[in-house]
Amino acid sequence: MTPDMITMVAQDTVVVAVKLVGPILLASLAVGLIVSMFQAATSINEQTLTFIPKLATIIIVLMILGPWMLQTIVDFFRDLMHQIPSLIG
Image (cartoon, rainbow, N blue to C red):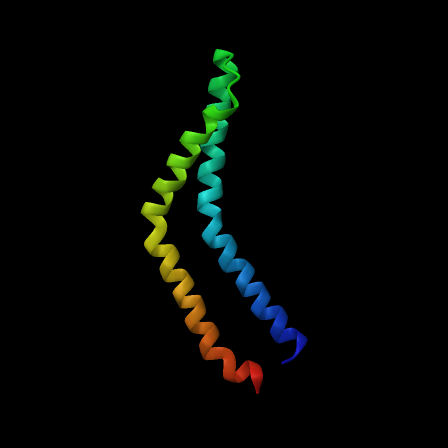
């Protein structure tokens, strides 16, 4: 196994991780920004106010994109398992 192969596998892993986490983080960021703007406009300084909307957003995103995320992980793992003989030998 050469350093180039290790780099390729690590790069593919990072790309898959970013693809999976990206939608969740972007949705959470958008909701946090909206709630923060609401807090600034109404002068409500409650720190826990952002928790419930962010949690609800994450749950909704996972319900909508969960099957795609699972299929992406399964495809990546399957490809990785098929590459093992060429990676070892």
